[in-house]
Length: 611
Image: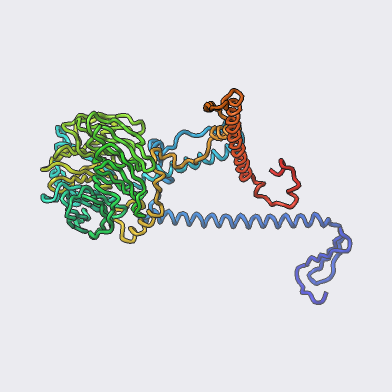
C-alpha cells in the first residue's frame, strides 16, 4: 500500500459479513504483503471479555478514589485533633447527652400509676392510651429537668454548738449578712398615728401602710422611694393593694375608697360600709370585705359592681383570710368556729369548731393544704384542709393575735409585742421557735414579703422589716410575678390578667371540678325517662260538703265525688302527654335526619318513618 509508512508489521482486523469469520493480513518491513491467515472467532465471547476488562478498570478506579477520600478525611480529623489539643477554649464534653434525673424528682412531678392497656378490647384504644402515657412521661421528665434551671437556693440559719437559733437577734444577723440583705432590716418609727396595718404587692416590690388614725403611705421598700403619703382624716381599718401597684383600697370609717399611687381618690365604694377586713382575689378581680355588722360582700374591681353579699348572722367579722389555692374566704368567729365562704352560695360551705373560745386569727398556706388558727384558749392549731382534721396542737404563752404563712410554709405568730417564727411546724411537732423578736408595742399585722426572706410587722409605733432566712421562694416566675418589671411590662401584664380573668361562678372547694365536663350520668338520664313513662295520677281523697234539700243524698254525693276525681285525672293525663311530646321534640332536634334536606314527598311518608 502506497500511503502507509514503513515500519513494524501492523495488524488489520476486518469483520466480514459472516458473524464468526475474521481475517488478518501481515506486512513485512518493506511493505510487501505476507501470508494471509483466516480463522473463525466467536464474537460474543470476545465482547464479554472486553466488558469484564472494563469493569475491572472501573473497580480499580473506584477503589483508588475511595482510598484518596479516606486519606483526606483522616488528614482532616488529625488536623482537628491537633487543634483541640492546642486550643484550650474548645473542650470536649466528658459527659455527653442529657443529665440524669433522680427518682425523687420524677416522683415529685409524677401523675399517678400507669394505665394497664392489656384489658382493652381494641388495638386502637391500646395505641391511643400508650401514646398518652408516653406524653405524660415526657411531660414529667421535662418538669423534673426544669429544676436544673433554678439556680438560686433557699437560705437557712444554723446555730453554733450550745446555741439556739431563737437566741440570734436581728442586729447579729444584719451584721453577719451582706450589705444588700442588711438593708432589708429597718424600722419606721411612726408614734403618732398607730397602730399600723400593712400589705405587700404580689411581686414583693412595694409596701403599703395605714395607721388607725388616718395616715396612709405607699413606697418602694427596697429603694426606700416614697410614692405617696397622705392623711384621710378619719380612721383607717385596713388597706390592700389591688391587681397592680398603681391602685389600692383603704377601708375607712364609713366607706371604702380606692386611690392611685399618687394619693388621688379614684372611687368611693358606698356598697362596702363599716369594713373591718379586706382580701383581694387577684385572678378573679374580686375585693372581698367583712364589716362590723356581720356582712360579707364581694365587689368586682374590673367593672365596679357588687357580685354577691351575705349576712353571716355570726356577729362582728374582724378575723379574715383567703385561701390562695381556691379563693375561698375563711372567717373566724367569737364562738370558736371558722366558716368557709364562696360568692356562689349564701350559706357557709364548711363550718369548723376549732377552739373552745373565740378565734383570734386564721392563716392558710399557699398550696391551700394547711390552715393555722389561734384562739383565746391559748392554743395554736394546724389543720389539714383536705380532711378538715387537726394535725398539730401547740400550747403557747398567750393567744396569738396574728398569724401569717410564708411561701415556704414558715409560720409567724404575733403574741402581744413578741413575734415568734416557726419552721416546718405543720408536718413535724416543734418544741421551740425558729426565731423570736421583741417589739416595743403590740403587733397589729403580719405578712411575709413574697420572694424575699423578710417579714413585715405593723405595730403601735410604726413598721418593722425583719430578716427570716429560708422564708421566701428563691426562684420567681417572671411571667407570673416579676419584681423587676418595667412600665411597659406592667401594662402588658394588666391586659393579660383582664383577658384571663376567672368568673366568680368558678370558685369552689374542689378545684379539680373545673376541668371536668358537666354531663348527665346514665342513672340521671334513666330516672328522668322513668318519670315520663311511669307517671301515674295521684290518689285524691275528696269529701264533698253537706248540702240541704236532698242534694247530699248517696247517689248525688258519689256523683260529685267522681266528677272531681275524673277532672283531676284529666289534668294529670294532659301533663303526661305534654311531657312526652316535649321528649319527642328533643329527640327530633338531636336526630341528624331532622336537619337533613326535606322534599315535597315527605307528606306521603308514614308517621313512624317521618319521625
